[in-house]
Image (cartoon, rainbow, N blue to C red):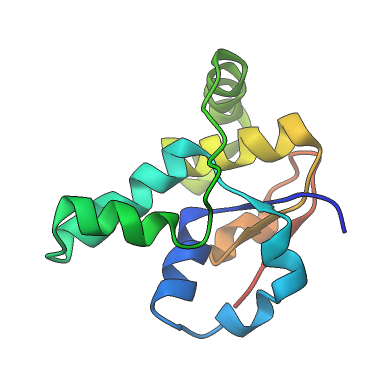
Length: 128
């Protein structure tokens, strides 16, 4: 299996054993990559929930030990995606996830139903 990209929503679903997390098999997870932007998003959500910042970061990294650094090219792609995704209300984190997937030509996994409507040149798998 080739590389896949995870959205922050999938990481949170796995951490909290939410519906859909069972779709994320060991084979998928062994090939999963996450942008540093999405790890920051996971940490932020955990901190908002009351987790200590350092512990929240460690939890975010439980599923991904080698985050993919956000590059200028990723930033450019994420910024450009606003033209085709604005009507869906995608956040910078969402577009950053998609930018990494586009750069790698890799499928992306999310829990976000609206992503089903996107056509950004990579396969999008909505896990619930």
